[in-house]
Image 1 (cartoon, rainbow, N blue to C red):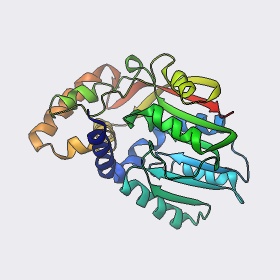
Image 2 (image 1 turned 30 degrees about the vertical axis):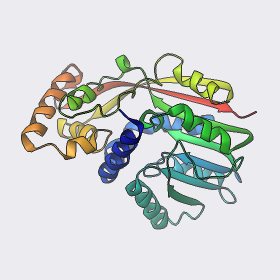
Image 3 (image 1 turned 135 degrees about the horizontal axis):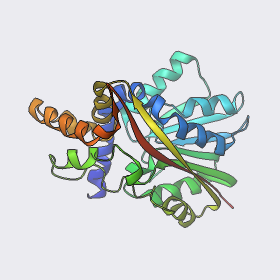
Length: 272
């Protein structure tokens, strides 16, 4: 997919998913986000960048960790995600965060202005993840760290058929390189190419649990990366993709519930 088109698909797709994202995914993504924050080892007074912040699932814990004098800037390509995060900050009375709509590959931020840069499950959607990491490297202070979490290898993510099932009904692939960074040492090598050093990587095996097929379908089609394509499907097409996807994960069904295997890769690297 042409990069400009991919960015547009991601921007408007996550606009569609914003209202559903946290309700469907907060519990599922928690292990990766907790490991990312552990590796970031944030300290009071630090200035932190959260790239692809979504609804602030990492931004708000980071803001708490650096309080009272530290601050967190959350950026996302989706205006709806940024608006939702700002609304949540106001509702919670969190004053040491700010949110801006921004392209991860072109951060409108000064050089050497952050102690840490975080990106929790966002790099998979960027047309050029190397450029996004180079931008994070640029805005880090010397000695600062970048921490990224991505989904793992395709064959370790039992829900992966969501992409070919959706792609078969649209003109171009939704996320053509989604699993690339999770494959073998790709994330670490990409961070190294971006200029980061002393890279450490951890892999987490998880089980994504859903109480019903309805909850699973909502997460996959309304709250995730295929939301834009799904929003354009007619009722018959939606019924067809629902049936095909549930069939693809039928081995992970127990009664009405599903326990689907997944993998996260989390890495930290430092600017020298």
